[in-house]
Image (cartoon, rainbow, N blue to C red; front, side, top):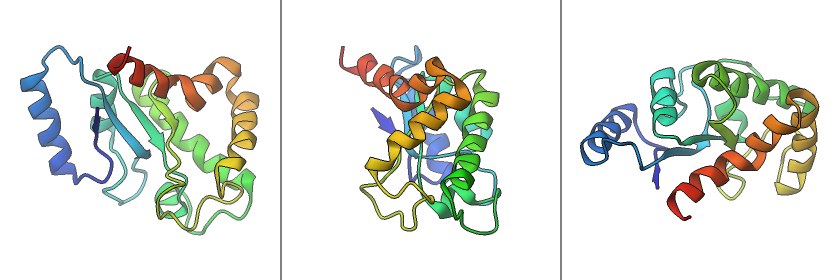
Length: 162
C-alpha cells in the first residue's frame, strides 16, 4: 500500500510516475491516510490532479481532523463548535466528490493517534466519531455515509488483502 501523506508535491508526482512504470494496470492503490483537499496554501493537502491520480489507482483520501490543515483556505479562525467543524469537513468531502464524481474516494483518516492539536471542535478523539457518522448519515444518506465512514477504506484494504 502506498501512502502519500506528508509527501512534497514533487515526491508525489515522482511516486505516481514510478508506479505507472512498475504497475501500469493500476493494481496498487494509493492512499493519503490523513489529508484533505488543498483549498489554501498548505502543500500537505492535495490538489485536484493528485486526487484524480488517487481515483485512477482506486485509492482513498482520509480526512485529517486537524484545525490547521482542514481550515486552511476555508476559515481564518479555528472552529468553535461541532457544527462549524462539520461544515469544513463537508466542504472537503464535497470537493473530493466533485473531482472524482462520487463519494468512493474519501474517508475519515483522523490522525487522532498523531500530533494534530488542536483537533476540529467537537472531534477530539475516536469517541466523537459516532456523532460525525450520524451527521454524515443525516446529510449524505446511509449509503454514502457508510462509504465515507468505513467502506472506502475497507475496499482499499481488501484489494490488497483479499
